[in-house]
Image 1 (cartoon, rainbow, N blue to C red):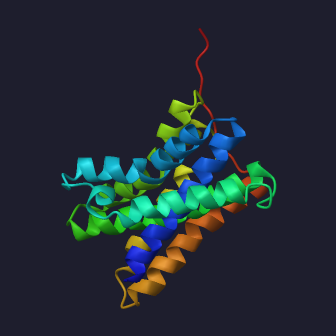
Image 2: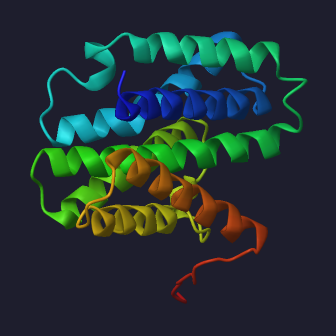
Image 3: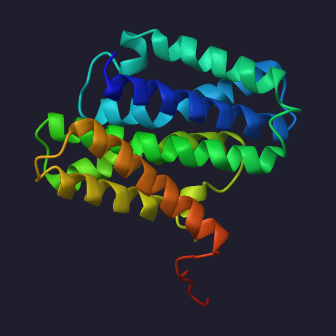
Length: 203
């Protein structure tokens, strides 16, 4: 197993746990917990694969993703009382998934010879749109549309990844380093309460 595939499965597990904790916080039944965890884990990657005309999409071609989600949901349900406060755990696993999937999506864009701007967009879509689907199904305003530093963290990580690719640096190091950058930016922004400006019109 390559580091790329390992990180992909790790990101899937992180987002699945995040989705499961989110669903349990909403007091959903086991089926609801699994569905929310599933769409959180693979929603962004599915949209990415549809956009680049990848057929079949990744999780349909490799059942390891489905197994990973099932195990992650089981882990979250069994250890939900030991994980700690659901909100804090949800945030942590969401940040981990955000970092990993940003770089995964960006790398897939590069592998398909897309323009850097498109590769950055694919990284952001991969990382955030599972959460968009999760929030939409749960009747919440998607986090990406809030003033929090969320998609911005993805862009910073993607740009750094593309910049480092111009140098002769081991790919595994670049993957891990830029993933940590996204996670670090997200955690720091929340800790310091950094936010983007909001816009509104008076009517």
